[in-house]
Image 1 (cartoon, helix red, strand yellow):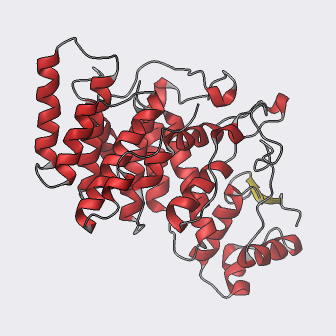
Image 2 (spheres, rainbow, N blue to C red; image 1 turned 180 degrees about the vertical axis):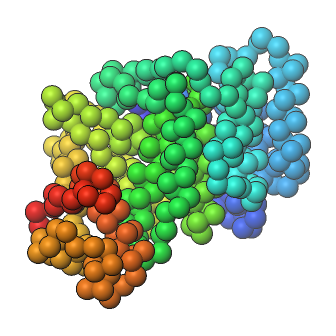
Length: 355
């Protein structure tokens, strides 16, 4: 599996004014995201998109043209093309709008908006369990959320993220946390189909709410890498020595949020190792230890001396607030530097980081 061909709008929009270029980028991402389901838009969609980018028609008029076009075509279209065209236009519209609320309801409403009239289950949580054979897993599947508690799992993930505080985090910590959040949200797979496209649109809008200038171009050119990175972040096969890792997803996010130039290749994620080149070991990022930052290093030293120390005492020793200590401990747990076992009051912390 490879990412879609080079963005067809890249040359077209590069010299346009900022507002029109922004619209072009929205279309680029919208079209690129169809590739995660192997869908290819029609030439008519490209022509309509260019008219919108040029300001000849509004985004609403573009959506209406696509709708009318398929009303006249009836059954004389290639399989999946109608879905690709309609969903592309709807994604472009959503990405061009500023309205956004961080909530499970918003997440579900994005799915409904993208797939209404296409899927009968648009905007509905699935009521059956699923498996999906993944190329990157050599035909195996991720363990997706159980149908009996999808709503509870979705609500829990949102509540955890809503109360999380990014203040005081380094950029590396922020990227890691975002990778963990979005990979867990995707792993629930609350919908029967369209999860990756819904998650990508939601994530782009959430990143903007957080103040990031999330470049749609990366989703346009590397949508398959994004999906495969989500898969690898949620897959374990201990018998074969394969462990879930957000390393690939973090590399994508560093390109997206920090303008890094990491090369993104689907083959490096394939669990078999058969597609790795001599200079690109396939499993290299998986077991690579995460080095503690200065605050984490100091906390590890404190914990080694006194495993029963309270958070208030840690804060006093570090010269920071208790909330900063809580965030740091949470980040260290996510990075598998420490583990808390037992209850909150009577439990204990186990140091996993050896450095």
